[in-house]
Image (cartoon, rainbow, N blue to C red):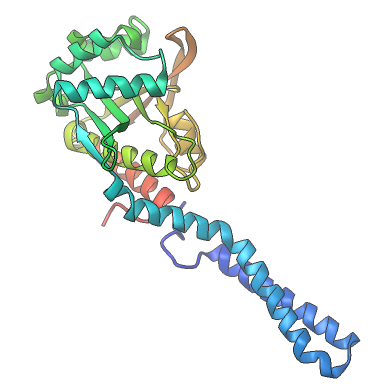
Length: 300
């Protein structure tokens, strides 16, 4: 899982390259036995050309992956920045981009404003520095023990979460239940910008979780999410999917997500999942995501 990604040449690429070179030489040798001796230099050149051509073809996907990774390194910091939603204008921008990404499957604006007033250190937005437009967001709602337990048992739904169910910002690190109401970017399917934006918001969301909510190993936190609450595309070996659990598990990143039950969310059938983590476990998942999508390790 990404352990060869930090090398200039991956193991598979080397194998492909050697195989292509051998094939090219074999072709040249076969032709040399059937052609005139004076044609030998040309036949060797043809064999080498075939080998180079095959190397380029077989190595192209790896090079494309590296190009995508480098674009995240060098272009994302200059093009995008994440901001903590700490003011009402920022909250208004979050509401607008959430509606753009999820359509009508978002809480009422009055509800989200009330929840923001109850805790203003739980969400981030992704801003395009060049245009000034918000193009993504991520939110984590730290809930009271009562609300978290009721959500998992079905006494209340994600749509029914209210400001009274959210803990104060000073208690973020003590909350046992964390709901992800939404995480996504606009134009997620864009080949050029989709993966960069998705990676940036997801990496910064991990940073928010580690800084504000999952601050120690004293007890496990339960991260609750719906299959349709995450939209974007990380790129690389991480497939495009609206399902966070399937996206990461499909790439070999084991979240150990537990299926809770089928639910109806804003009129659509959905599934409720929970991931139990402490800080060490979350850092390990974050490191796996970094290695799989960028080819580098978060851990030093």
